[in-house]
Length: 454
Image (cartoon, rainbow, N blue to C red; front, side, top):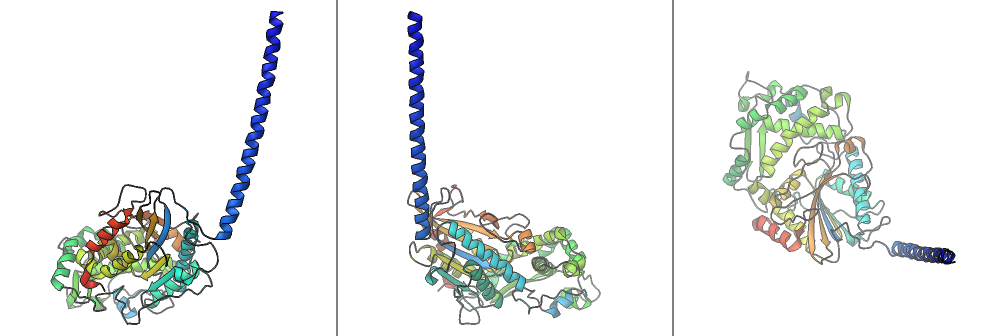
């Protein structure tokens, strides 16, 4: 009897446990259905209400974005007569005047504009479709055709058919992008020369010697130079007339600083190769049929080198970049209101100048350190963190070489190359290297030259 009593107790206990599990399962199912329905209703409500504030990891809510973009793929700015002195080979026809945005260049930057919309919609700053209110997007481009046309095509990618306006200066030179050439301020010739020569290590001949391999690679492609190139200013008739042999000199005047000679020609030609590549040229139209991807990338070293020597020289960057950095800083200081997006379209020199003032560097795959491909951009995001603090996140972004070559559509899922920027004067160790807004403003104001601002 005792054993039978114990067995009956176990059976009853098992039945009770089973009933408890059944009831718990039903309860969990009810909770799950309730949460699912509420979530679906919330999503429908958010979709009807338009873009909402969202967070990106620990970065916080995105409030505003300022983008400083380079123009897209253009034809060479050097005249046909100048390029005819470099080589007897036949140059490809970009089918637009010198320095103009090409149709292919317009197509490429329109893809970048579409990416900006997709990304900013994901971040809750804009809706995914439709025309944004005009006051929410402000676009200012330099006066050149390539910058104006680039801005128009980026805007068309960002807001198709909306006709968002592109602003420009009513003068021949816009002081925002060219304060020295616009006579807002001038170069002190001695300071300019000293700043550049310090970046060059004091000796262009020695510098050319260390870069002889890259010079020789481009020499094999360009086959420089014609007898007309070798006048008295470059060693006289009968002297060596190749890129490695041509001396390099610094040319300084009150409005412009530039290089001329072997390194300068090689740098310019390396950029032309990238323009040909991005424009979709192949066969004899790409590097006269003598170039390939590896040779072009070796040439990139010379363009990045010479750009860094001149445009990142502290004195040059300060005189030329202060207006732009001031504009960027002022836009970020507006915590609420419009515009939500400020797009500035200028040149690679502008990006170099502003980056140098902030001490920012990048190195994207396939390119050289601090290289500024067509359509590439500096972007500055103002975010409010979960702790209530306002922070600035800097990024450099550009289409990859394959995205340029193949004109691939861009999206959040298929983004351009991007690198978070570390600004030595203010960046923290948080993800994305942000600066507190107050610290960014302080760093920017210490970096600029008030004499070149207005």
